[in-house]
Image 1 (cartoon, rainbow, N blue to C red):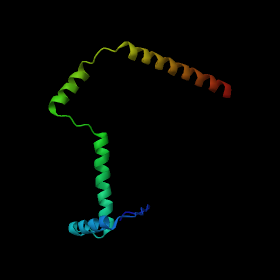
Image 2 (cartoon, one colour):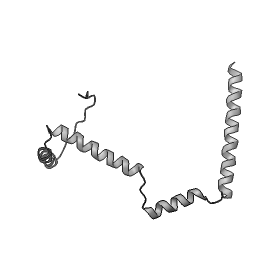
Image 3 (cartoon, rainbow, N blue to C red):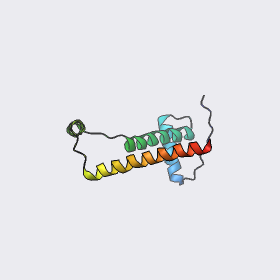
Image 4 (cartoon, rainbow, N blue to C red):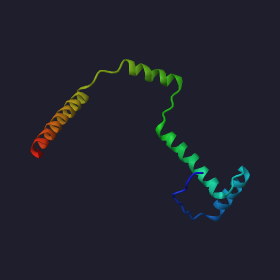
Amino acid sequence: MQTKVARLDLRLDPEIKNLASRASALVGSKNLSEFVVQAIREKASRTIEEAEVVRLNSEAFSAFQAACQSPEPVGDSLSAAMRRRHKRKQESASFRGTEQEISR
C-alpha cells in the first residue's frame, strides 16, 4: 500500500463535484478521491508528454535526419559566440585556479 504524504484541498463548484462523482461511479472507483487522483495523474502525464515529446511524420523525420547528417556551415555570428564562450570558460577556469591558490 502506498503511503500518502501530501494533501490537496479543493473548493469546487457543486456541478463539477457532481460531474466527477458520476464519472467516478461509472468507472467503478472506490471513492471520489481515488477518481480525482487518477484523473490528475492522467492529465499531468499527458500535459508533460505534450510539452516534452516532439512527434514528426515520416517526411519531417527524414528531413530532420538529412539535416543532422549534413548540417549547414557555421555562420559568423555563431562562430563569434563560440569564441566568446570558450574565452569565458578559460577565464573562469583561470579564476578558479587563482582562487584555490589563495585559499591554500
